[in-house]
Amino acid sequence: MMNEGMIDRILRVIVGIGLISLVFVGPQTPWGWIGVVPLATGLIGWCPLYSLLGISTRKKEG
Image 1 (spheres, rainbow, N blue to C red):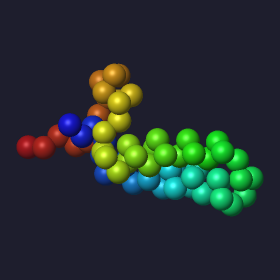
Image 2 (cartoon, rainbow, N blue to C red):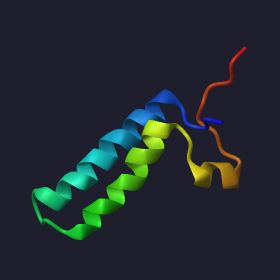
Image 3 (cartoon, helix red, strand yellow):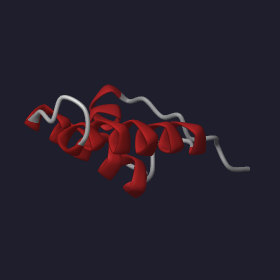
């Protein structure tokens, strides 16, 4: 079940790509691979932390 709204998903994808780019450009640190987490959750639309905390940024339908 999706628990992320569209703006949340877009921001996560942008942040994820930005962090992953740090692996190849800039400081070239492996810490940039942490960007896989927001990228994946943004593409899937489900955040496990949101589920644990009972948070949803997705608009209610109906």
